[in-house]
Image (cartoon, rainbow, N blue to C red; front, side):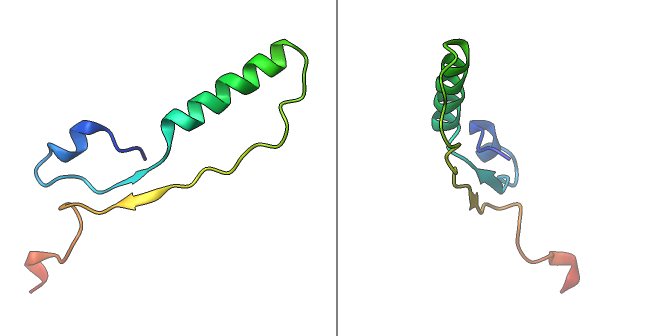
Length: 64
């Protein structure tokens, strides 16, 4: 999980599941501040994730 910059530099480049880490961190900080202030943080939002397909998946060359 997570699309770190180094995953593209591998050989082959790694397929990953990406997620909106900045938005997730911002929401975590907002919820923490609400907790400290003893306020309701509301409903936890849903965050999407998506697959970034790179060279680490595909047909197995030895299976041909």
